[in-house]
Image (cartoon, rainbow, N blue to C red; front, side):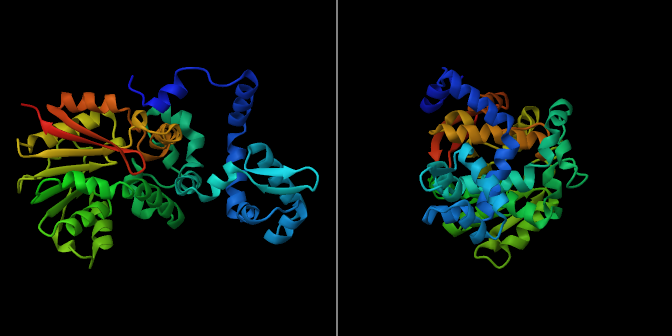
Length: 364
């Protein structure tokens, strides 16, 4: 199994003492409470106030407008969680390093909102989803087979957190990705699963001659057209409506595509579905075509916390998104690539928030 150096160090040997392991187990047992307490500490501005000054229980209650009881419960719980510290001599609380990251790290804030707004209620049905291979946790939002079918109809706060999560991770890699994809002159690019057109806009802004076709569900194309309306280069962005879960849905053949782009797309499908998609992509490729797959492979992460986030995100796909996909190990995806009659020509690692790009050519 491929593991980056930091993951090798963390996941192949025991690193905790017995007492630390026991505490970690209790932390898991109280996980939902830990999450809610920490979210409220951020939402009510308590951590923000403790960043600038030390405060007592009573002072916190007065500043945020809650009861002394509520302040005491939250601060004592946060003390044992590790987000605040206390001075026993003065009974004044301050922000810890963990609290600082919870408050200031952009990825952590995006993940916090995503898990509260999108995942929290549905994750109660994770066991059922794992057994059925269906996103049963999605049902409290609507009667859709996947979350993508209902994105435009999700409650506003949920939709906002979903897109913030999706865009945060992809946008951080765009600048480096553009240099890789446009290292050669392109006339046409097929953006598979292009969502709201953020990557397509980057492409037409980067190269004044390239024409981009976004291939996605009809309802997603409607969101894309709204999001790109009146933007510079939008007249060079076309839409091609398709349901990629239908194995009979073919890739467009109206023109030759110099590049095919799949960003944070294949993690939305099961392995058998990925094989079908790649086989259909291979049919429109020739020696002049390059397929670029950008994913956050959990095994190729430079820092271990990123691998933790990615493997936990896999369960969002299980319970909420579609019931059968995940954040993949790179070896699993490369195996499917080869079975589809394609070959990985080059791998670019450590882009943005932990992305990798596989440069893929058609096998000879």
